[in-house]
Image 1: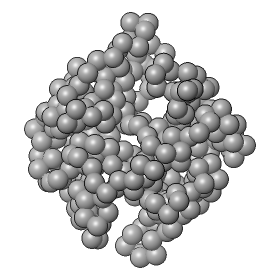
Image 2: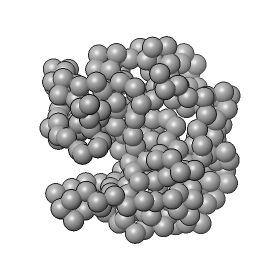
Image 3: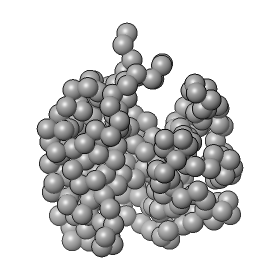
Image 4: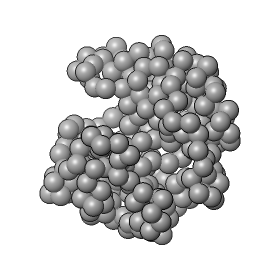
Length: 258
């Protein structure tokens, strides 16, 4: 079982879903992934709810801090010094949407936006290091920045995190970028073009599942929508894109057939 107690800087380490109908969101993902929900009772925690799988923290949910904010998933990238990373974000042309702040004893964080418009979080671990379980069914397995301006995004993320970026041909003239930390694949970069050109820039989260088709069927039965029907991606696995009943978009990925 792939359990984690630390993450190298620049590695996606945590995901959470913001929802204006948190109870409905909790019910959906609990039934879809078999998560258990534990809401922080402290008033200052704002209803932040931890999701666990097999007793390990895998994700979280919270109500929006601003009225009218749509439901969405946020990817958090690990940092040893969130204040220094915030400075690099500004220097590289990004926007720090909130000044770094402490989250009890759990850690220190900020939320930022890259120059192309994609929003992401930065997490400096305290008592909470991030997801304790990943790459297993019911936990996140991949994150990618989706952007209409690959050149600007590459320059930004190289400057802030020092990523090595490898290009992988996808066919139809498209190229996927893989972000590496210390030689390890940690995230991806996808160009919003053609049929996806109108999609807002974002950081997408993919959850591992044992059966993408069955997960899609279950999600529909729970009130979700399948935005991209399951399809096989060479050497990656069987992929689908979904939307939960409150509007947050996410992906699922099953291992390729052996």
